Image (tube, rainbow, N blue to C red):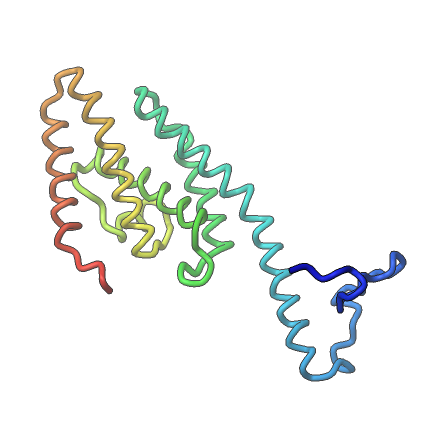
Length: 195
């Protein structure tokens, strides 16, 4: 049921009305209940400022990681890897606390960087890297979720890698990939996700 415009309680501000920015309002003269609103507004402005810094950096890193995986599967050198790590460190410094601000697409960035680092580690060492190894290799301190998502993504990349190795008859690499993915799946199946 709609209310006719003449009966509505809220009225539009006149065209000449311009709201004052928060910085121009003297909080000392504002009634105590209203000061909470100004604190919330200041927090929202800070979140918007951080978001405006994060978004372009997040998109750039994701594009570079995707391109790096494409280069890897086509047999090219991973030349963007150092740039990806340095940009991920900048993003990490903007959003250092995984429990507070790293959600959604920011968490995806760190898990994708983790998968790239873990893949390089596996190709060099032949084993799955630990979170400590990721920190040594990249300088990033990851949450458990970011590490777990990154290792699962790395296992998906190993699938493509092992198919490529099978076409050239590299049985040793295929066996290593199979062992890693089988042990990772075994651990995940035995893990209690209720915590």
